[in-house]
Amino acid sequence: MTITEPALLLANASATGETGNGANDGTATAAPAGGTSPYEYAWSNGGTTQTITGLMPGGYTVTVTDANGCTAVETVTVSPFNCAISATAAGMPVSCFGGNDGEATVNVTGGTPPFSYAWSSGGSAMTETGLAAGSYTVTVTDDANCSTTANVTISQPAQLIATVSSTTAADCHGASTGSATVMATGGVSPYTYAWPSGGANATETGLAAGTYTATVTDANGCTATATATISEPAELLANASATDETANEAD
Image (cartoon, rainbow, N blue to C red):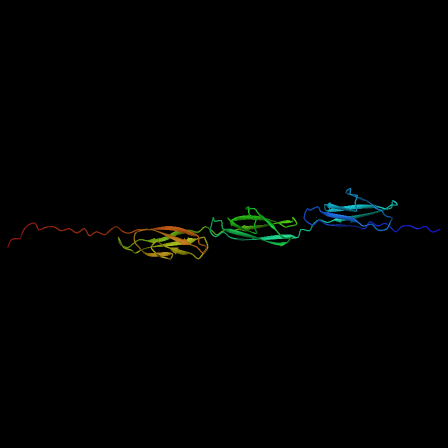
């Protein structure tokens, strides 16, 4: 008499990972071989079907029982989605001190496009405009719900200041021999100068007594003004006088 036995029962379990960050859409399947069908399934999460779905990352154990009550046990792992995304941000400085024309752009590496952007200043585009000097953060989220952040600092030039460094009074009352010199600091050099009398240099000559306001413009188009006052001496008066003869001289 020959005694036979069925082939060894194997669970042959496998799993698929998440398709997106936090998607919780992993699956696990048992494909039993050997033993005697039909088979029953008992998963560690309570599932009783051959395939279980909607799984978060982690380990899942299946017990397969065949028609003869033989069992096979196997554990599989549902892997989390790999969020391979990073970002860097670069800024363009503000043109003038106290201005708000700075810009910042984010560059994304990896991830699953399309991307969405959320700037700490409120913008939602790759490039954020209208920025004042300061620090900003952008959060980038990809189509798989993976996110990363990048920081950027927007700088600004020093305040452009124009001052009158020297003046020379007119030599004579009513003469146009005075001069004034304006000095610029801050901003972005080089500077240009504009005097109401038409001059375009830091020093303006040929000035009569009066008040002159010079406008200094830097390389970014920022402006500052300085006012010079040219003085003159009082008008020179001769104040000549004469006296009459008091009597005719005799012969």
